Image 1 (cartoon, helix red, strand yellow):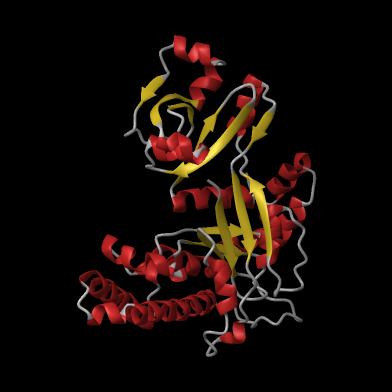
Image 2 (cartoon, rainbow, N blue to C red):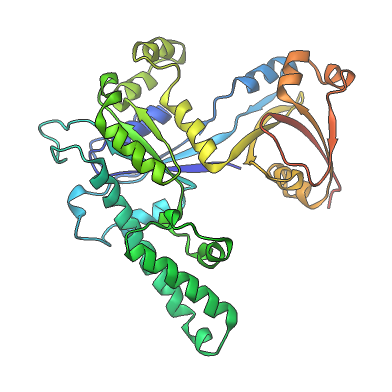
Length: 360
């Protein structure tokens, strides 16, 4: 499975600059009305170590799609509902990366002179809640005939939708409402944008800004979402992303960073979405795959091919650390470190698997 990160934020927050820092796409950032997207490989040193063992004909990394969603104008406050077209792009994202300006704007910038992360976050949240409220109202009206006929399932769904809608109208995004499994099931088809998990990106102008009060305010907002803040010096990292890979580390270290914003954001996104990587190996191909933490073996195998999930028999499993340290599958088996797992096994980070299945 691949997953999509949607970059959201007000215009002039540096969102496209962050997009360039993550993807090295070099997108022009003077037109905030355009959408940009890129698919990037998830860097993984373990994949390269496996390549040295197998020397495969084909190498496939796990991937992530990044979408730079057009920015919402800061002066849209009080004009809610005008961002419906932009919100359609948000619906396709698995996780939202909310870019918040934590630097003073240039003199010619259309941004307000004040740095106010609370206002900036609330402006986006309100747009999402207005859109979600209308989506729920549409479902309520669609089920009204069934409700009048006494359909118990429709009555329950409408009650759940009305509860969520009322909280939205009180300014509580769906992700903060603590919805139970029944309520989540009732609103699932609505694909509520304010229910999507959010990570916050504090876009700073220089490394010295990393300790400013704006970031602490943003961290408090993130804590309310059970989320985290990734601080990025967007302009500098976008420039670094255009360098040759061999030259990037030196410049990152000059900024006081051990790794790029892409790696830090990937780590945060994996944690937020509960993702793990596993591997399939051989002389024909070495490949990294992604599944959700807690996925049972047949479900994870289904990411490789749907027939593997349908006809799953068992899975041969070793850890990537054992395979790399011992140097071959034969050595792992000889050391007694290969396991046979059945349908109830939950895939772990770094598993190397062979799936045995009945072909349909």
